Length: 379
Ligand SMILES: *Cc1c(COP(=O)(O)O)cnc(C)c1O
Image 1 (cartoon, rainbow, N blue to C red):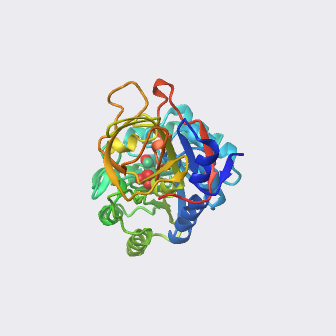
Image 2 (cartoon, helix red, strand yellow; image 1 turned 135 degrees about the vertical axis):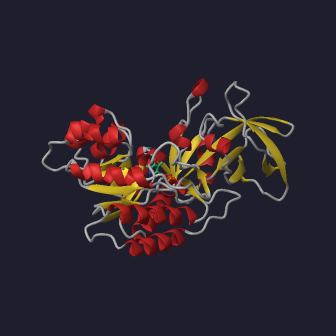
Image 3 (spheres, helix red, strand yellow; image 1 turned 60 degrees about the vertical axis):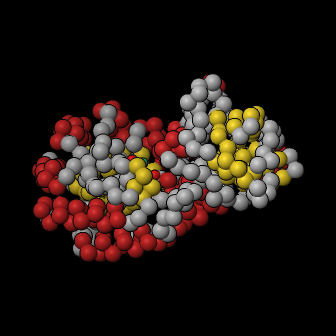
């Protein structure tokens, strides 16, 4: 069981951490889970790649999440082995042979995404003669509009190929579905509108009686310098467009949020290990938890010294180096911090729950060594 503190300030006072420290906020994670479960008219699958830390997934499970978007046998096993009553879905369009076999036979997976005829052939070779054929979900490639990260260049098919795949999968005895991912961190709802336009055309052209429609992830987190619409706007667009599709009554609607479920659920506390004029050397950086900075994400900050939080009345721009010996280990932009910031002070970076902890490296031996719970989120 991790230590629990009312606030990050209490944690810093107690631990004075000199290695980067993660503050996990369970109430924030449970709230986000409930916002999705209450607002989305279908199953909510957590895209576990966004943050696979046990403490984080546990909190989402406590919040009611039971469905998981998984992309590897490792992810499938991690939720299947740890939780009761959960359903993993194999949402990677390109899968290994053994992984496909084990997902179905060992872990009870009944939904697999595909986006190529040869992958359909693979599914047929491995699962063509099972009693309960899985749903093959065809991934559409949708225009990436107002998304920070495009996810349709690597995977997905257009109208004609989708129609072919729906037909060929049906011929081989598989129930079928459709899915898309409009891109991560969508700062408007336009991407979803365009994806529903394509979905409607595919359904009109194929007449396929789809068993599921999966509208993917992409819901935004409120990073610094962004002003995304509230979750309710996304839910309203999706509900309206789903209604207009007039889907079969046994068609299950699903979404796969990653970032929006977990971003606000964790902050990271780094220590200033040296100040050289307006340059700070921290113990976490872009090879660690802040890789998202290289992709253009800006995180909110709070500064603490040993007496508590430092006032932000007098701010100045600082260049931030991470801890490794690589000179590329630098934030790609300066950040405004209290001018008085000094060696030994701490900077808390908010909105660190999505992807940062999942993709961080241990380059040069630097890694977070403290994990704790805090009651108050920092967004
Ligand atoms: C990464 C991913 C998600 C989660 O996307 P977010 O933008 O983090 O919500 C959902 N579905 C698939 C297939 C993904 O690859």
